Image (spheres, rainbow, N blue to C red):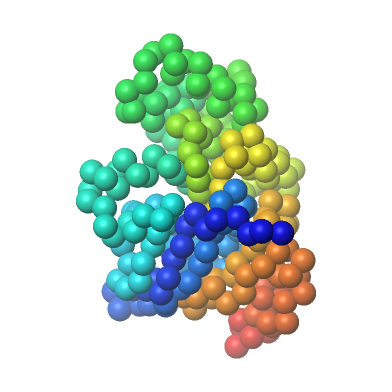
Length: 252
């Protein structure tokens, strides 16, 4: 089977904050159309990795390429336009508290200069895709945690991005809602044909949505493969993490 083209390529990416090394010469390829989940403990740099992919952070060393374009070669205006290729779903949804669900989803469309009629149609489509029909007039404070995540998803897909990024989409949710969120992520990828990169430490969700899984540890991807390959990975650090054991090399 022929591998799909690499859509996101990171080579030798290093990043430190206040003298603390977060990414340490990280290499990673994300293939077009795949669902990649990056796992790892809290504070290992997973969200920092996402921010490098979208150009919100610049590496101290190394390169980030998306669709063959080196992000470091783009000026501020170019990278702002380039980010429209991405849809980013933040933790907790990151909605505007004073806006209704409809207004939140419409926000990126208005910024992009869409006419009112097209905005109305597109907002309806996005809310249908995430199963939030009937929630258009609600404020974020009136939504459950799961509904806030779904509203954030609807806003993230409004401009039909080529790449969807999900940052800990199931954190703090009950098991039933987690399964709903996972199903929506899978459905969005299929219906939009998007590449998806998800950051997670929830192994049940990871195995439900991933084509490939990469484990980030001490600033590098220490293992990457299909769910079956990760389950069979001989690295004790990987096995301790996916099994959720207290004892093992990660605890030493």
